Length: 92
Image 1 (cartoon, rainbow, N blue to C red):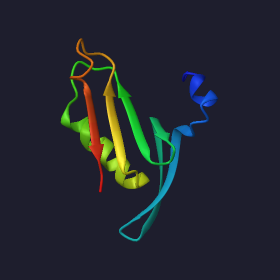
Image 2: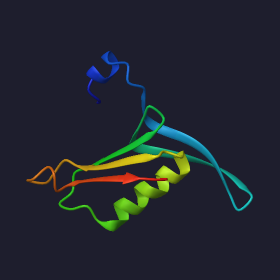
Image 3: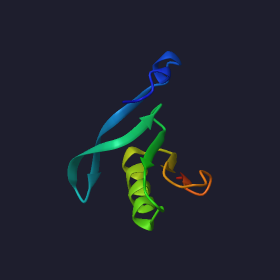
């Protein structure tokens, strides 16, 4: 589970985001599991893979658009060099 220190600092987050959105005159509900939606503005997705592929980046950007999140962080906790495995996306 998530670190309880997050609650001590009163950081609002949701491990599962349920979002309503409209596309092509359809009202849809998306459930984003496995991501952290932090303070209603940062989409955080953690992976444990050898390398970040373009599919993960595209998925994060799509989820950011649906959630109207201005910032997304794609973190890889598996690489030998931690700085290599992280991506930050800013959606304007």
